[in-house]
Amino acid sequence: MNFYDENWDALAGKLRNEIEAYGRLFELLEEQRNQFIKNDLDGLTTINNTVTLHTDVIHNLKQEREALVQDIWDQTNRNGQPITVKELLKHSPQQSWPLFEELLGEVNRLIDQTQHQLEKNQMLLRRSLELGQKFLNMLVPTEADSTPVYAYNGQSNRSAENIPISRYHKHA
Image (cartoon, rainbow, N blue to C red; front, side, top):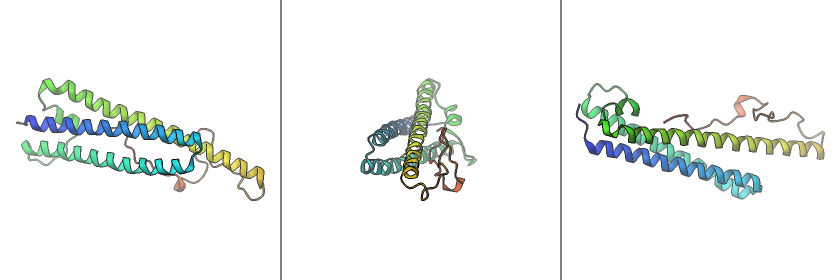
């Protein structure tokens, strides 16, 4: 198999772009947490929209990387079988292995870190909603639903159809 150096440079660039995007997402999630704490609803709405748009950017970057990986593979192996980055890297020059291992490791670390921050933010939102529900119960006990929306651990006490589905993927 003959892979060209420019392919590896392009792949490294794609991974670096993902790292940068996940780093930005982590910053946005930190800002989201700060908006929760400040109870700034306008700021929270703005940052939520920004987070949503940025997750789309990350999704597009991942798709571009996956397409590049498949394109590199298809250049030399015409069997059309899908391949992952890790499988493809077995065919990269051995001196580049540490670089790609670090890049992939950093992407996966940032995915885990942002997933953890997202879970913390969701728990903060759930607790805020619960506090609001308790406050409504105190003001108008007969009007408010007395069933808590979320348990202490952040899990919903309501039906699964009302729980938003995360767009985040566990690993690159």
